[in-house]
Image (cartoon, rainbow, N blue to C red; front, side):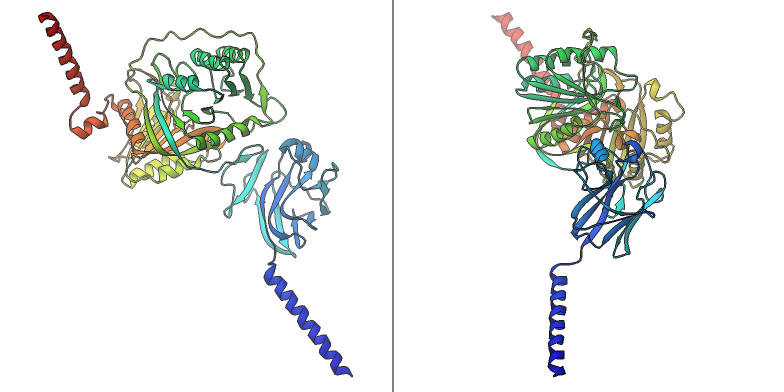
Length: 560
């Protein structure tokens, strides 16, 4: 009587064991990671502090502790945001978290908390456990640097590959094959190209700019508004020295002529998302994107042809325009955006600067690879490009400065390339404010030259006909990659500012900017590529033909 019952029980146990084994095989154990957290938020009492878990499967076996309090989970799964106060988190981030630690609003469920869970600002830790076993831990300041409003992100097995503040974007690199790119330089032909893009716009113009005092460009945008183009302008609201009277006059004029003008600034209780909006780009009709190193000033984009040396490009490609449109929209949607209210400052007088020499014309090339560079999101791409150099690097910068606690990594990459055999030339501006301290351009150049490498040279641009100063932020790598950008080679520009640039992969583009660089370097303009291919200067031949034709015409008229 006993044995049959025992056999039945054993069969049931085997069936259960098989079922459990199948469940394990079919439904693997859940896996989670702390992917993001902010311990020192902007809200009162750090009510907006939070952490994010990401993974798959049930969270029921998982807990998070700060060493004092512990949070456990129930039916949650996937991506889960846990904030101290749902209401305060929403005020700062614009959306509600999944769980909140303190009961602040009905829209957010309460987290299961044992003891007090609150992250300290300067020193604390987060530990993720599954069934009591530690899976992940992060401590500060040991693993990450602290800072008000600083978000810590975990990616590819490491924390904080970049400095990230509340409200900042997180764009990924993307490369496009542009239909056409028109290359141009200031002071020679930038005004012509930019006004041409504005004049051809039919529906919309978006402009993101650090400073704007150019009367002629303001009038071009006002004319666009008059013919029905919607003009939206985003400006830095707190540039170094403040917004000038001239810029106020320009923004007043544009506002009164129908343009929507906004500023990004730390006017309220919260700091601005970026130290400076230092961008210089324009998007027309969602098809053309102009990116340049210069501000919309008479010196930066001169109508006269005399002004700063800078580089720029007008990219005709819907994909590139869409990418920059996303950046523009993200910047315009921030909590630190304010609508410009027109005041009484008048439009300044137009520039009366004498005509420049205009050595370089614009050049259009087709089917070109181009990668947007957005600071601080993807400014690391510049370091990657420099590190890839095998044969040459030409660098032209308004200035280069070392980081607070280390040397400038991009300059170091260029020097390393020279030490590996590449020909490296570095040119910096020579204006007094870039050379009058004990650690600026002339000292940087001297340090570079002091290395004594025959293939590494640095120069200061002090006197070149047609050029007011060197304001460029560009580079040419291996005669095939060109950097055009607003990104200065200092600490803040790539890490804390909003900046914009392009990496153009094209031997034609590299040859164009190399000719400009060579003139700035030693005062001579290399022969154009067509002349080089033929072995003689085509321009002289053409000039000879024109002169011969005029002489022939003169003789013909005398005889007849």
